Length: 232
Image (tube, rainbow, N blue to C red; front, side, top):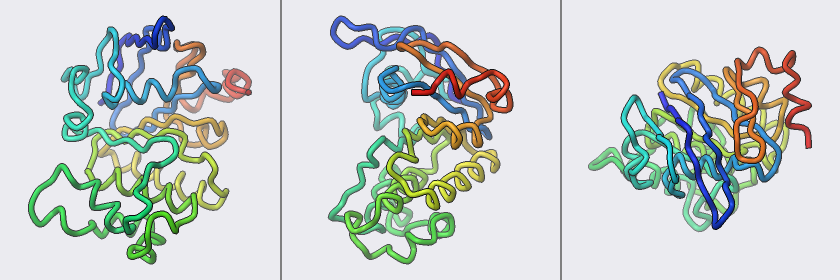
């Protein structure tokens, strides 16, 4: 389980995150929603150690990882799919995925696990193509596969539907749901597309102006009026 306890983060004189707390249990998809500029991406960068927190705690299975480097957090079990995907455009699909296995050693780092190609069959078909030659939706699938290659206990996704065609959004949704239901990892999903978030959410957290303004179970989102709360 990933636990975030009252974390604060500042940028210059601006208080970006204000006592943000939530939990992401294994076997669940925990969705973070909010309008643009409320601190969602900053929160994820703090979870990964890309940005430091000023105060509070980030716990993974009860262990405080707040002072760990990003590399140490990856080794501890976190994996991050950033907004914009950040794939290596000149490397092949296969090479991109193998980079996600860097925390391992020996023969394991030289072959893409077959289950990743089973999850995203299009990547198997295109494994010798350069990442930059893929469509935006295919690149998003590649970015998720690369993150999964590290065998994470927590998968963190920043707006995976952004700029993606509807058919691939459905495919990505099915994969996220399947991964959560397997009960081997916690999933933290930051999302702007409300319908996608509601469909996948086991639990939700809504942010505004850097703080949490609503939390609850995913099934309660319609009756709690969460769509209106995050509407742009």
